[in-house]
Length: 536
Ligand code: NAD
Image (tube, rainbow, N blue to C red):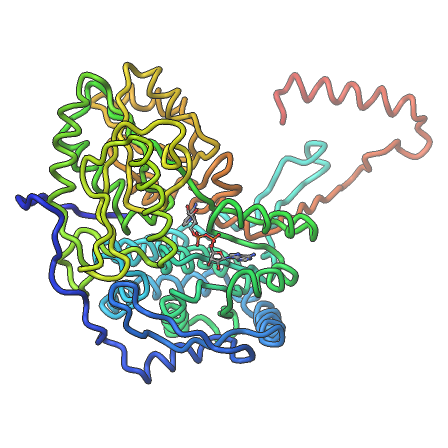
């Protein structure tokens, strides 16, 4: 993912303009046509609104149990023909998707912004993410999925071949914060591998997924291979997992535990991308100016509603004052707004409950003695859920913000005495999703990175370097999740592996008339020989 932060001379966070007008590039008819793509209608519709200004966005049909049943039936029957197609044909769809999404980005940027309230540059990160993943899996799927010869039990006599099969129907349950990236980029490798997918996007951001669903069909994806159902997780989640062959879930740790429990009961696999309380380390040899700029991207992309976002910054004593002065100045200069244009640095929170939890964390910290270095205020003058980017100091362990994920534009800065102190404090969490280290010495950074309890560590970047390196696996340890997206692991998880071994000339058993004892001695000689020859 990429994001750009342009420093300005403004002294306080200020609006980039008036809140976005409800008029976007979608007509009512177009919204209705997108909503009609969902396998839904059997349950009462819900209405969604734009977080940035409260304007109505859509009447969304909801899926009943019968709708879900129908979605799975269609997906199962379409999956067989899809899996039977040559892999080259399947990946060609995603090459076309790559081109289409880059060409048609204007419309989807409007939809993402309207549904989430985020700034346009943060919405663009999602477009880039889908393009990157489409290109990556289109290029690599063949070599990862093709059958592979493996060493047989006995050289020359046994051959073994590893064959990958699609799981069948994969359920993708995605949240609202990165609705395009997290619904499409996770469905995409499952589809490439020959599965059908039933997606359940969050209602708040369903139009984004439905728009991508239409685009995928225009790219050549057969009609029923990708189904979209709609409904609140707690209403339809269990019904989905009940029918799935694999579940891919992104959201909070608490919900992820429940999904893992249900998947375990059915003995199906699941991949869980969960929360984080991510630390950033600014070492004594860091380029302080770059770290102070990078921290703005690392902490406030999508108003901090980013699982990879930094919520704790540990700064070496020697550079603490310089870093904090520059960081706070950069934050003060940020432009707040969610206009459908590239003219703001941070948008709105997405829900009232996000505003409540962000306010509660900051108020609790203030009441217990933390210092607000900048921000710390709700900004209803900009839109109902805008909250200023906030930097706290003097945060102590009894404050909620110290340990709990805020999932908003709030970061705490801490002074540390040395690398050991920074590492110990960074690792003092049950989460382990992402971390960031700023240093002029990349080797020192890498050696500290290996000691951090985190699935990804970015050196001299907040999250974009690791997230965008899709050839490498991405995911969390500890309470941050199970399984990986990206890389070979990101597609192999959607397959069942089968071993086909062929024995020829002699059996792996005594020859006719041979006693068990002679057979055991013969095999012992063979095993010694294989060891001496260095065979696997
Ligand atoms: P949440 O768990 O409440 O909801 C996430 C999604 O899961 C929602 O769309 C919700 O409808 C659905 N859901 C809820 N209960 C469900 C159930 N029983 N069955 C199926 N689906 C259900 O989390 P949230 O607060 O809305 O999202 C923010 C959280 O997601 C944060 O903790 C954040 O760190 C995490 N997140 C993680 C990643 C990652 O890649 N690791 C990415 C984005 C968000």
